[in-house]
Amino acid sequence: MTNTIDTDVAIDAQEIQRRTIRRTDWVACNSAFIDCRTPGSDQKENYAFVGPGVSQNPNQYINLTEPHGFNTGAAGMPNGISNNLHLHFTAEVFINLGGEFRLRWGADGKQGEYIAKDGDIVSVPTWIFRGFTNEGPDDGILYTVLGHDDTGGIIWGPSVLRDAESYGLHLTADNRLIDTVAGDELPEDVALIKPMQQHYIDELTTYTPEEMRSRVVQPGDRKYSSHALLCNVLPGGRAELSPVIGYGISEDRRQVPNIHEPHSFNLAWVRAKPQEGVLQHRHGRPQVLLVKSGRWAITLNGESSTTLELGPSDSFSVPAGAWREFRCIEAGDTAATPGTGEILVINPGDDRVRLEWAPEVTAAAHDAGWVIDPNGYIAPTAVMEGAAEDD
Image (cartoon, rainbow, N blue to C red; front, side):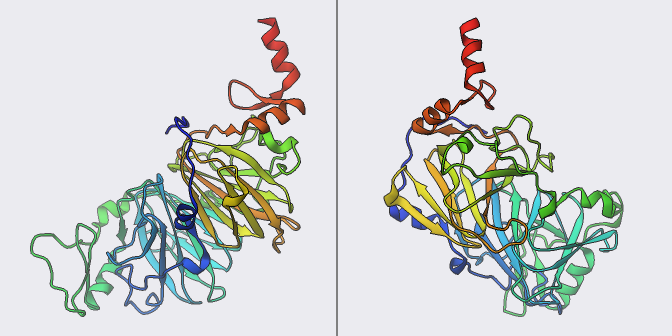
């Protein structure tokens, strides 16, 4: 994964609009999966924001189809509705944007349970069966980030496939949903998916509730640094950063994320008081910004004329190489971080993301006593200049 930026990337108003995904732009698919007729799972809504995710419906609406190195989407369902047991090959991370969901795992869903609440982030291990039920308000939402551009689809629990077949639904080996009730014919050239054989199920890794808890980052588990970014020493740039998955964009040499395991992406919380944020910078990878609370202004190209405002559950995809800065303009109402707004920053890659700061930011930080060392971390200007003189 590269951090190199060869040319300036400027995005116009039309491109900014295309890459903005507001909550009002979400388009639900109610028949994304094979269990869409199974009682108790028949009112699910699936959303695909960046990439198709694991939807099995070719008519699933996708807001942005271009590869990012990961997929984003969301699951919505009324109280009492469940997403049945299934298995992922790549990372699946849930970000609770509000509500209460009971997550369960294991081939029979009885290995363990965890109740996810507002602000929780849960990284579910690959190659285990998982499902979840909405036990909170009808409008509860689990935002999802899935590893890689090609997720490989999912494997459903054997009972899920058998139940779906009784409602006329079948799944092909090339991940197509066949609905014989709606008039689809079973294909002759592609095999239908059969239930996973029991001896393979028996070989899957087991996870205790304690082990799964280590993969959950609750609001109280976040570890914010006020010295994670070069701009932190400057007015308007005093956002705090808490890496959740991977080291990401942190420039604090001592900051450690809650979860280290490779996911193909890194994810961090950023919080700021009104009129503070992250000053102008860029890097050579696409980036998704998701607002959790408050309102944020995102400025592109270093020009105030290309500024957009985002509110809760709105997101924006920043193209690789584009200059960007983001600033909280209105605090949210979350108990976890009162008086601040919260935004999630998602980048592709399991390695660190090296930032290039705008020249004026670098110069002002230098004058304030801080620079970036050769390893990409914040260091005192006097020490670094003294080291150069000794050489």
